[in-house]
Length: 419
Image (cartoon, rainbow, N blue to C red):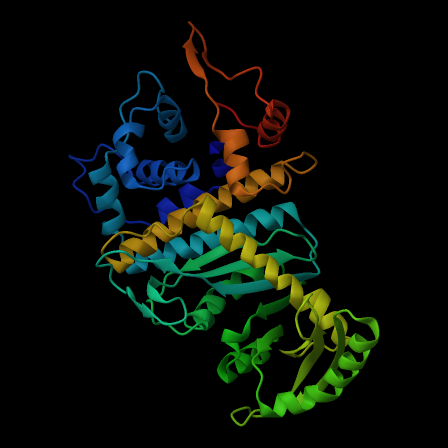
C-alpha cells in the first residue's frame, strides 16, 4: 500500500494542499503523517477514527507512516484525527480535490501514452445519516435522511477499469446533476493537458439530462451520451420500433429489441438533437410481455445499436465502482457533524480507493487482476506476521503457507515495494 502511494505521489500532493495552522511547539504529528495514517487505516478496513486507539501502537501501521515499527513513537490518537478532519477549510478541500485528480490523471498518462478516447462518467450515490450532520436532509427517492456524494471516474479507451478521479459531497436534497458542471470545469483542463489528442466523451444517466448541461457539452466540444426519460413525444417516436419488437417477440417467444434514431427538440432546447431509441419487449416466465422503450441523447454519429450497446450500456459498470466504495472502502461512514469535515473524510476515502485501483493494475496477469477491494484486502493485506530486528536489518516475516503468496510477491515486485 505504501509503495502504491509513493508511486502515485498521492499523500504528498494532498498534504501539500493543506495549511499548517497549529502551534509548531505542540505538533507531534505532521499533517502528512496524520493524513497517511487515516488513509491507510481506511484502506486496511478501519474506517472509524476510534480504531486509532489500538492501531496507533500497531507496528505495521507505524511502518506505513514511516516510523520504526518497534521503537517508533505511537501514531496520532482519535482526538487528533478528529481535529484534523474538522480543521480543513473549503479552499484547502478544493486544492486537495484538484491534487487527487491531478495525481490520478498523471499516473494514467505515465501508464498509457497513447489514448484515443476518454470517457467521463458522473454518478451520484447516497450516504445514510444517523445524527445531526450538516446537510443531512430527507430524500424521497432513497426514503430517508441522506448525504449525496457525486463520483467522477475516467475510462481510457475500452479498459474495464473506471478510475476514480473526484468525489464531491452534496446535501441530501441536492438535484442529481448538482455540482456536475463545476466538477467538469475543474477536470477537463487537467485531462486535456495530459491527453491533448484524445477525444473526450461524457456518459450520464437520466438525472443529468438538462439543457444547460447539454449546451455546455457542445460548447466544450465534448461527445456525450445522456439518458432521458420518456414523454408523449418520445413515446410516439418509439412506437414503430416497439411494433417491430412485439412482432419479433411473438414469433420467437423471447425478449426482442430494435434500434432507431430521430431528431427531437424539447421546448427548452435551442435546437433539435439526435435521440437514439431502443424499442424492447421483455418476456419473463409466467409474466405478460412488457414494452420497454429507452432513449439516449447523443451527438455521436454512429449506428444506433452501437451507440446504445457499445457506448452507453457499459455505463452500468460504474455501479460496481460505487459498490466497492460502499462495501470495500465504506464511504457511507461520514459521521462528522460539520459538512466540510465529511467532505474531507470523503476525500480520504477516495484516496484509499485509488490505492486499490493501483494495486489492481499491478495485479494484471494474476488471478487478482479483476478482484474487488474486499477480495484484495483479504488476500493481500490481512496477513499475520511478525517483525524481527537483527544488527543490520528489520525483517517482516509473512506466512510461507499463505494461499496468495505468489500474487503478493508479484504485485510487490511490480510496485518496487521496499521497507
